[in-house]
Each structure stands twice: as C-alpha cells, then as structure tokens.
Image (cartoon, rainbow, N blue to C red; front, side):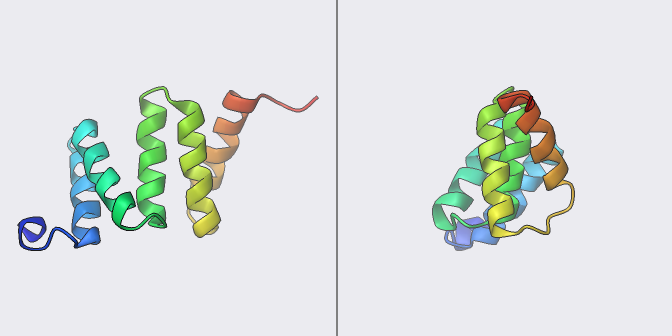
Length: 96
C-alpha cells in the first residue's frame, strides 16, 4: 500500500521485490527491481538481487555485470565477491 500512496518510495519497491523473490515469483520481482533501478541506479542491493535472478534464468553474463556493478558501489557485500568469482569462471573462463 505504500507504493500506491507514494510510487517514488524506492525502498518500498525494493522490499516488495524481495518479497516476490522469496515467494518464488521472480518475474514480479524483476519488474519491481526495474522500478528500483530506474529510480536509484546505485541501489546495490537491487543490483545484487538482479544478479541472483538473472543467474537463475541462465543469463550468466548479465548476472555477472549486475553483481560487478553492485560490488563497485559497495565492495563489502557478503557473498557477492564469491558469486562474482564463480560467474567470472563460467562466463570468461580461467586464465592459462
């Protein structure tokens, strides 16, 4: 109902995106994350959530991009560096 009252309340969209994700409704979660990132492109939690969803959808390259952007904004996020390392190997391969 907060979104109905104030659709510019970015954090309400972010919380609802999380709720949709927990309820396994990833497409509604994605829709809400798009609103969050349109209103606040540096919302690192939304970027991390986007990365997680994109990976679940098999969009590894786009997931890696979103997670890297999240880490650029907040390099102290738990688990995200490990996710980036894992996806980097899948997307870019290993160095010789």
